[in-house]
Length: 212
Image 1 (cartoon, helix red, strand yellow):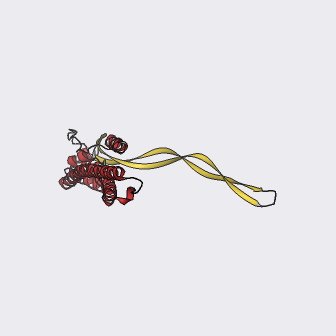
Image 2 (cartoon, rainbow, N blue to C red):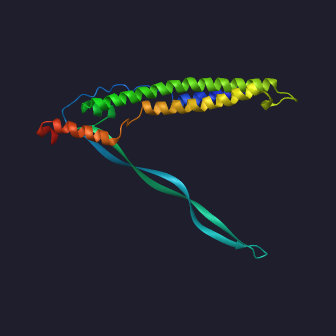
């Protein structure tokens, strides 16, 4: 009962944090004829770290020397860059950016990548559930057959189910999270591909529009 409850709690947590992946819904962004662009933005974040700030040297009654290191909490600031596609002054998703740029090859790659992510996520859920079931069954068998003469590891079937289930569980969780990340990735393709698509599109615009 305890094992079953724990499994349900872990699966519920996984569902809440990851869930079932799905393809992003179309945004309905329409082409305005404005130039496209890829812009980098710098974001700032803070984090805490422990840093060495000094040492204390002391001696005991026998003259033996000892050194203690002193650490202190420090707040540090970090920076990272993130790029975003724009149509004119309006931010657009990568899916829309490549669609507006009429880059069919990139659109096909994104669609394929997202669909494979959804598939991995679904397979991951099935694998996770099979792993949880096998682990629970193995532990249940071991507990049911344990006594003063026979311990947990004396039942090969129970051990095999428990270990095999744990492996399946781990693989399943990886596929669930990896699949969801792939299906819902903000940047399915690298920045260079976006910049190349934008450059080709802008060169196809009338001179007046491209210079805006």
